[in-house]
Length: 212
Image (cartoon, rainbow, N blue to C red; front, top):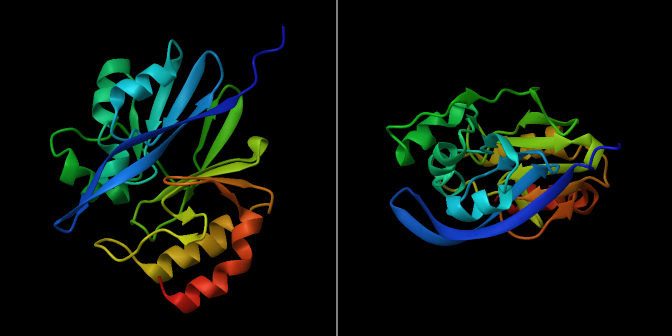
């Protein structure tokens, strides 16, 4: 019997993002990649119950955090406790993680070049610092898609005006790690609508000129 195909599920959760003394209302994309039996969650934002419902009866292999900003990790410990799944985060973002969860560390480190496998499909970790020091993207070549977190959006790079961020660094990450992917690659972002590498690549110099 042919196994069920890997698929990407998506939900939007709402909450707040806080850093540098400010708090903002945000809507976050939560991505689930897997099949009918096993799945990874990418960015457990705001609502552990809604994410657990989306997981359903599948085995949750891990909760991948694209970075340590609180709106992307606030529901991760509750989801981990409910499911027994480990939380994965790049070590360079642990300083941000501890701002939200000082008493609960991530379970496993993410490193550039790691390949996480779900339903026979590989997710390659791309370290893309700039929005935060430990920001990562997850590239699934078999699905022609990359989960970009807050590194690349439809219309430009993620924000770099707050602590632990760097505009030159995020531009280098996007240029070297994302815009080198096939142009048809779908970019599934941390907030807002998806885009493609081919749609964003022509605008790199505009972003540099804009400086943000």
